[in-house]
Image (cartoon, rainbow, N blue to C red; front, side, top):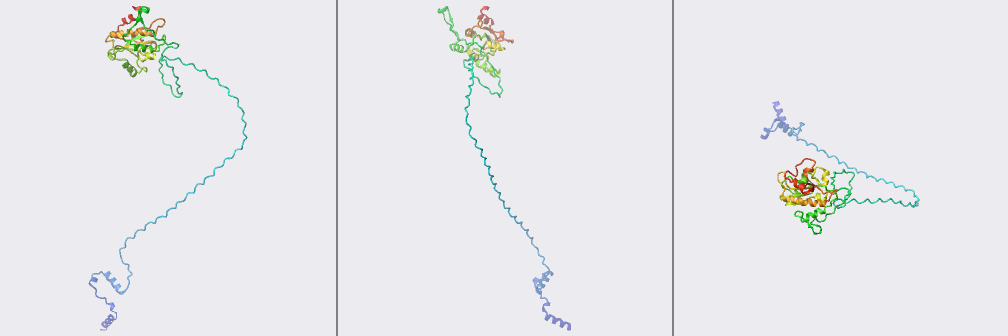
Length: 337
């Protein structure tokens, strides 16, 4: 009984020792939570640290480094330019009279070059010494010391003053004037050579193109005269080449010496297959007679008429097997008549 009374007295004196009844919300609490609630009711702080989820502490941002203050460059102090040292003043010299210059002898004027066969004075062109000289094709236009032969008087037929001028059928006045205008050197032309073109048609223009572009002849047409056969030009029509008007050597014979002293007349036609026309032979007759009078005589002899194969150093069939050689030599060579 004493123990029971003692217990009751203790409970009366210390009511806090008996815990209050748990609420419905506290009944579902865990033991740990109950212990905490009890300690809160007793006013005792728990030394135990609550296990709480700590948030991730943010990493501190790097502080910006202080900007480097640009240092000002020191301005270059311009160096003082040294002043030029004054030159000592010199006394002006007296001008002495220089002796008068001795006059240099003036060179004598060179004699003018002889007019070429073209009738125009030649101009001297100075070439630069550094550049190599190009190959020059020299075209002979006569012999040194030869003078120009004037055109002959008109040919007449008949006796003395009763004769009349010769009429030409193929040598028109225009062709005769072109032949007379050429500056022919005296004793230059000694031969007249007859050729055929070995083509059934053609003209001086066509042959000039062939000789310039294909055969690479710098002066073009190799002949001095061309007589047409009625294909590209008229039958018996006479064409004058630039070699006659310029009075330069021909290119119709395989010899430089013979080309320089012989005139070339070319028939249009292939006389290994055909015969020359009658008008071509008549035109050749008029042309040769006129040229003989125009070029004059050499050593008292008229220009010699030759077929190409009879004067060429190399063998050739020009002017063809059907060309009338007998007529050519007997008609123009008095000794063979």
